[in-house]
Structures are given as structure tokens and as C-alpha cells.
Length: 200
Image (cartoon, rainbow, N blue to C red; front, side, top):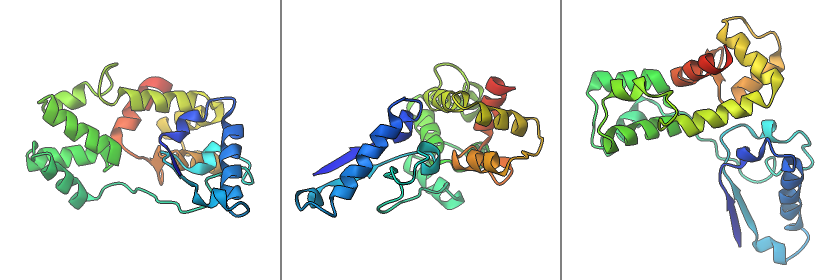
């Protein structure tokens, strides 16, 4: 029996999230004691670091088993994906797309899909990226709700937007672990633009 859960990080704002993750961990632990449970496999997909989702490591289902981390696409991978979509952009436009999204896998794939299916130019896609019905809107709104639910994280975003150094190492780490920044820079320009509109 396999239980696959996608977008598990959407449970974060829920009151029952810690209890739910604790339940998943207890199911995993039963595998070592009960023969019936040895046939149970749990698969979870998240778009943030597990550390952000649950504070009690003893109840966390994220620190057991095998973790697979999807890194940002490099130039060769972006080019390969672009070619799989029929190469809708000129080389200079593909470089612009790469500079804009910095190889973020979900955003890059979404952008190429929209360019092809809606027959948009890159300029049109970028101009409407923050619109309420843009292809990026659900992802960006989820990100905004996630940040708004944590006043400390929202303050850290405001500091980062103000080009001030974030004094708290923990908050800087949390921004990195949520995928918002890499080192001291925004992970992608789309995130920066959206967060500037929402949190400045």
C-alpha cells in the first residue's frame, strides 16, 4: 500500500497540521514493529524545507526515509525543457526567461507551457505575471498567505525588500528554507516583484 500526498506544505496554516504530521510519523514507526505495516509506503511532495512544517522532530515524518531534493534548473536543463516545448523563444528571450525565473522548476515549466498553449510572447507573459488570473497567481497567492501567517517571516521579507541585511540568522535561514532567497538574493525576480507589491 502506498499513500502519496502532494503539496503537503499547504497544511501548514491548519490547526491540525502538527497532529496530522505526527500521525504520519506514527504510521512510519509502525513499519518497524508490525509486519502488516512493513508493506506501507508513504510518499510526500513539499515545496519548502521540512523544518518549516513541524517543530517537533520526534513527530516529524520528514526526517525519516529518503529525501529527494529538486534543485533549480541550470542553463542546459532550461534549454532542454524549452526544446521539448517546441522552442517557442529566440535565444535572447530564453536568456531573459532564465534571468527572470532563475531556473525555478515549477515556474519555468509553467511559463513555457503558457507561452506555447496561449501563444503569448515573453513580454506579454511577464507583463501579466502578477495579474489575478495569471498562470503564476495560485502559486504566488499561496506563497503570500504562507508569509502573512508568520509575522516574523513577513518582517524578514520586508527587510529583504528594503535591501537591509537581515540581522536574525534564523530568519535568513527560514527565508532560504522556504525557497524565497538564495544566499542574500531573491530566488527569482518574479518572487521579488510579487513580494514587493504585497509586503512593501
